[in-house]
Image 1 (cartoon, rainbow, N blue to C red):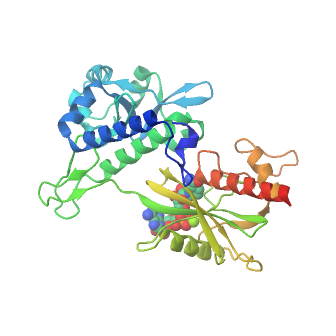
Image 2: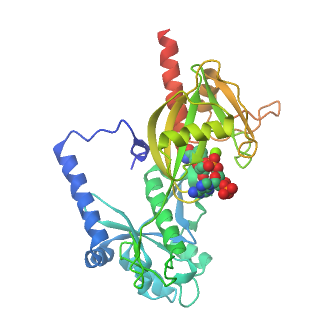
Image 3: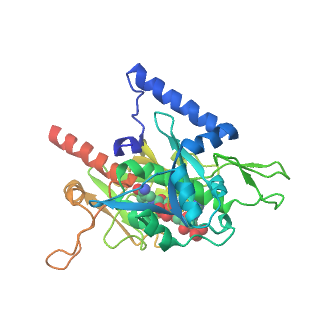
Length: 352
Ligand SMILES: NC(=O)C1=CN([C@@H]2O[C@H](COP(=O)(O)OP(=O)(O)OC[C@H]3O[C@@H](n4cnc5c(N)ncnc54)[C@H](OP(=O)(O)O)[C@@H]3O)[C@@H](O)[C@H]2O)C=CC1
Ligand SMILES: [Mg+2]
């Protein structure tokens, strides 16, 4: 999947060619069947491909300056499990994460989660040697992940984490059982059905018409500024969450807002990021930073932001020792919001 498809943009339109649409529909119907029918899904496992994780860290191989996530056939996985003294039944703990246009199902399996290992967890370093790759923490690998793999790895990690944390029913306290695809868990005692959860988060780039507002938390990498973000409260609409977060974090009242796109974000725990542009009225631009939430916030000009956007990666110190501010990388939806704002401002200043 290309990065342009990675964003679920508001401007998305159905492909024109009939054949493409029917391939998509066929694929979605097949995935639905895999989630609903355990026998079909079990069969798909035997001809499917598996992406491996260890304690939620994906197995990655370096290719040039990019990390690739190598998939393994079921037969190869069984051979590996047997080599490490594990039962092939461990494959039952895998989760469905997608399929190809040719209906080859893709699964993810975590070899390091404690509850999966009856005879002690597989040794990470031995596995890495055998698999000719490394299990790398997602946050560390994020900026070098192959674009094609990002969405798949995000989904896989989210599902694996959710299953690991939802082993027991919140009502009866009994163990829950996952369906083969891993799209839900059921408590045989209370009959409660649990579905994977995610948290809705709004991310907003505020503009006063000529400048945009960027902020940083103390936990951000040094020098990085981003758009304002915050978790939605229960009962809120997206619009209410944007207005509240902007008011809470920088003390400004949003005048208007426009939805841009959304993104699944794995940190800290399966968020659905919904990105918006917002404006504040003229004369309503005095920032009051909420220091419990932010380290600093400020207005930045088009030139400053466009220059920062052109910079690749996190900058090293400038010659005079000062660190110029920098922006989130392309993989983060904040980057897309900032890029869109720069495009819009540039075209309107060209027209003026
Ligand atoms: N992809 C992208 O481009 C970007 C993504 N983000 C993501 O957006 C998310 C939200 O931004 P952030 O500014 O931190 O959010 P908030 O401004 O909402 O502040 C975070 C605090 O909200 C509380 N909180 C409320 N609900 C939840 C929940 N469901 N899960 C976790 N914490 C919750 C926690 O407080 P307490 O601990 O006191 O309970 C947490 O410390 C971050 O996780 C960040 O990774 C941010 C910027 C860019
Ligand atoms: Mg915030």
